[in-house]
Image 1: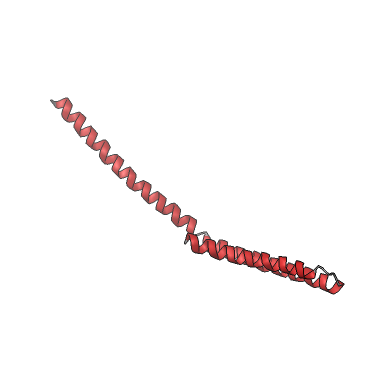
Image 2: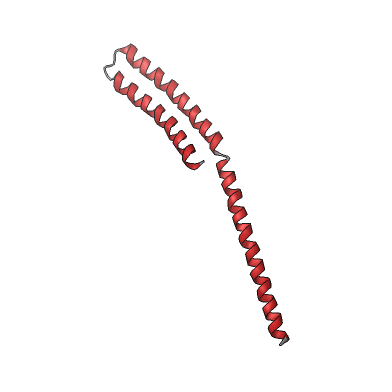
Length: 99
């Protein structure tokens, strides 16, 4: 009879320990989510800065083509402008989607 009580109490202790372990798992997932979402603000600002640099480089290249009389200037301007808009929109959509 005492062996059954010991086995039963050991089973209850193991069940309680696994219940506590599940609670720590949820806390770990919450901590990981908070750490990942904390990178979105600096990442978004970095993408905006990259977009600004790409815009400046594109503006200089378009100006050089325009000054030299290249007939392909409008296509080049559209592609650089599209790249800058894509960077800004992608950063904004990713930030709003994940936060």
